[in-house]
Figure 1 (cartoon, one colour):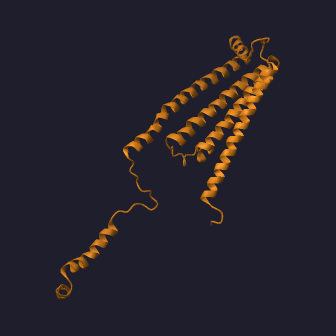
Figure 2 (cartoon, helix red, strand yellow):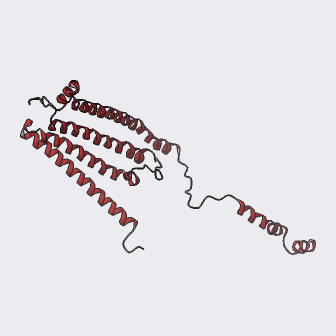
Figure 3 (cartoon, one colour):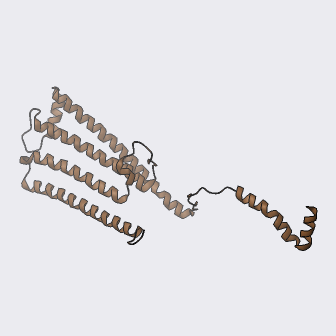
Length: 240
């Protein structure tokens, strides 16, 4: 080896000999250096002003917390009405009076006992509370997932089916369908007491319900157009 070193020094400049003998060491160091995992996204450094603007989305958090409090009020109201209905069915005079006052309409004869129509109106009111609660859940969970921060519920066993593919367009369609359901309940309650309303009121409520239906259809159609356009841009014709 000393003879080989002497020959290399005589025939090759010193700088090149030094580089040649240090090359294996450089290769070893490059192989042992940590590498980012395959598929990892590069870390993007955000400037202060864009970071501040992006953090403004957390201002919506108090709004969603307020809707959770509203949900608690609806739960309390639901069990209050349910307890009055059960009490009226079991002969409690105070509960019966509360139920009759709740379903009576101004200008009509007030019912004096618990009838099938009275029970139906109370149950429809309970269903109305449940559907409004469902609407609140969609707004709270879907809105937080879409506009504030991800919840990372993909592996959770209780993840709602609609949340797996939620976005702003899907959320608008879901909300429109929920509003149509709530409007249907109110329209059915009106038709049960149709003799207590004039024709103008009945036609106005029916027209509002039809407007909700048309709005939902228009939102769904626009969402379909946007989805088809995005699919064509992602997979143009003739691509494999």
